[in-house]
Image (tube, rainbow, N blue to C red; front, side):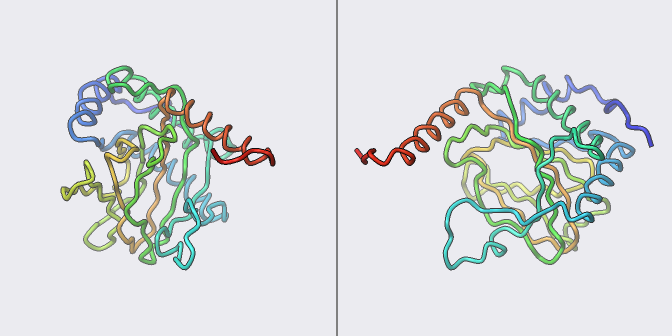
Length: 240
């Protein structure tokens, strides 16, 4: 089946009239039926193929958590995909659409200035009750400013299957529940404004996540990492 060239929706209108206002007011925004069923089906088929071929590996946690079951905290399996690999063309097209939406948001997102992004993290929760405990994507100013998640789950019933992404806007008691529905695209700030968790999933749950970097914060983070690496390599360096 040939790939479509992209969705028929007005991306500029979505960016300026939906994504920007909602990010600025609520800190998150999601769009439904963003790509259409035909293209969404092709993305789902490619993600399923990666899963069935064993390309997805256990997701990792930062830090040394002695005595804690990592699978209890994070139970997904993941792979990092550029979208240029053979057999991942539809995933690449999805990424190009998300890129376009972020570019169209432009300088309307406050001080956030995006110049680069991560590869796509293709993730699967295998349906055995696994989830991901409450966390912040970027608690350490590593440069990530916008998290984008594209969901691929047809006929999903959150009351039966669980798997809701629960966001805690502002880190308070208020919650926003986002069901991982097929062809839904979610945006939210990656920093401490949006702690979130993936509730236990009782059916196979697929998602594709990409992070966009603020240029200034990313450059500062790279400098910190470089200095840390150099200090570890220099045996004469001392703590100040």
